[in-house]
Length: 142
Image 1 (cartoon, rainbow, N blue to C red):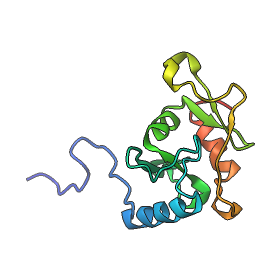
Image 2: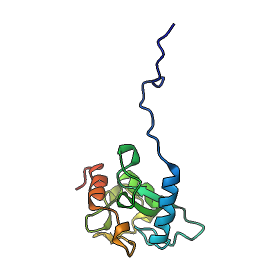
Image 3: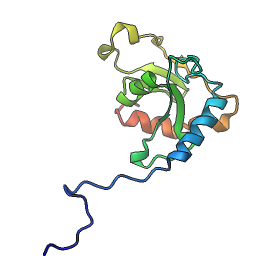
């Protein structure tokens, strides 16, 4: 009889547990604080055609916290650009295109020097520069 082994069948690590109610609570709070605007584009996220999402600068899978210092509120398509490293954020809170050569012309709406993020009035809801730097480090872009 085989030993009782609680590991996964192919040896992969068990997925970390995330409290999705915490994420939902953070999302609701960020929607209020960002005044229903995308941090990168400023787009109105109350528009039914846009889907808001919380983008975690240090992914939860990497030990990132469910906390405003690790998050920005963005439109889902912008979240995909951040996730792929095509758009990054500077320590001066400016979003910039990191790999314009990989983007089609319709997605190149950011100015060359970057676009100042649309941030909440209260700095306690701003992402921390440490988390922004962590996100850039994932793509070796300091």
